[in-house]
Amino acid sequence: MAGRPRCELCGSRPAPRLCPRCRLVRYCDASHQGADWKSIHEKICPLLIPPQPCFHSERDRKHGKEQLLRRQKSIVEVAASAAQGFLWEGKALEALPAALQALRFSARVFGWSSVQLVPVYLLLAEASTGTGNLRQASKYLSEAEWIVLQTPDCPAAVQSRLHRGLGLFCIAQGNLDQALYHLATDVSHPKYRNTLDLIPSLLPVIENRGIPEVTRLWHSWLLSSLQEHQGRLRQLRARAEAAPWADDEEVAEYRMTEAQREEGTRVLQALLGVRKKQQLPEETARVLHALAMLHYLDLDLEKAREVGMKAFDLAKELPQQESLETIGHLLELINANFSHTK
Image (tube, rainbow, N blue to C red):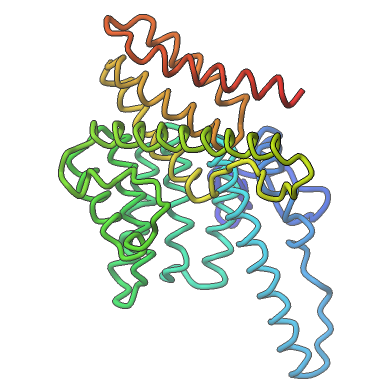
């Protein structure tokens, strides 16, 4: 029957359940209500309740509209941030409700054809890819592409981000030729030219060496970063022993930037999926080792040990066990840091 309220999460089924707090959002069943609450509704429930209108003049009406717009923009920021946070944690399913809310309110604020919707569509595409729903991810990416094509003055950074999303989606599909094109277009963006500390994950794509070289360059870069990190720590410890009274402001743990961590996790996880599908244990072990180093440099010791053990166990089964020593050394560093933090 037309006009009946639909579920906030799936948008397709009748929604008899009503949120008891805001009394505005409906769900088809308790599972969808719980999933939406955990993902985003808990954070935005108070923001959904509109203020009581009191429009005695044109000035009051204008103030009311401005207040509503600020609320809607706040919801967009909160929802998009929550979705991105879930994706960084590898929780694609939890990211979907938050990304959907970000899309709905972005459309209300900016309009359905606005370039402001492109980053949200990319969040939805990444979340859908993470849950295995490649068909839905393709639809979201198509919407993002259409907006970019219809926007002559679309910022180059948005176009670059679109190509990054398309490239990672093509990797998930196993379409490495198309991935090569999109990722090469992404890294040709001027924002990378003067960024000396950028993880060079996609530079080989520019040189048309292909996906295997991406893994090797990541592995090499992280290995050198790990060695540099250990060398810096040894110097700081020696300095501290020689002058224990000195200012210890410089004795700080190395930590990756959020952008580096995001890029590293997304691209390496995508490459890991490709290598598992291709049943290439040596390359899979290399990617796992790179991921373990990434987590270690980001001080996520639990994740580093978990992934490092997978790399070590897989490397033991390989005919050539040259990587066992370096992976074992990483595990020793991780365990030593665990002992130090306890």
